[in-house]
Length: 258
Image (cartoon, rainbow, N blue to C red; front, side, top):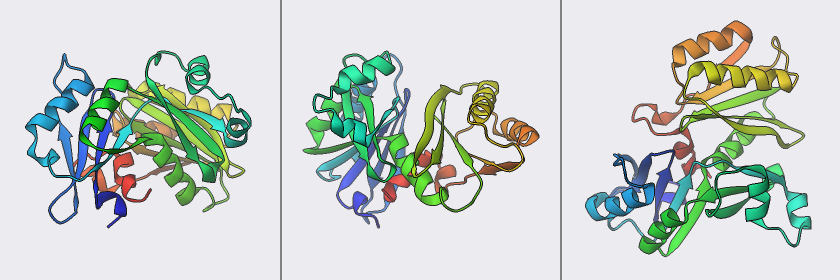
């Protein structure tokens, strides 16, 4: 069992969703989605969950707050060279709509990158009210690490990855031991997801015959989308994960590894 589950709980916050990964009496992680009440903020829902759900008592003194929010990537050397680095200013100059939220800085050393992402301050405060130790992470940092370690050097073809989660598709590729491309696009509709994926494929100059597309996560109209991908590209791979049966997000299953 990974040390992460020996003394901690994972709280995953998506776009209007809330779920927990809690160790049971035998330290086996159990996935527990929480029915979010409309008209209440996620922070308020989390506060209510702590009051109502018995499985949230006696789960240790550490929590991993796993959030799905737009992530800004900066080359590590650039981040380290800027002694006056202001996360709020740098993030706000690139990604709008998150003013007033706490900006978290996460080092991805194996990819020579530094990630900056926002977390709702009220949400973070609720978690800190219940746990003295809080480790805040972004879902995509763990996913990027997994894809790089698992797939980057295992073949000669160029590879594009598309992860569907929280009504978006995160598309990324690697090159020269770094993240070559990474961006997030709305993916409520399968047609939009198909368009964005093929647009990025073309923008990166990838070969339809030789290069590979890997898709995974909660795809809208998955059968139709897979059929369309196969119409345009020769090598389309679906990454399966153990959480499909209970609808556990792919990124949550990876927390046992990173």
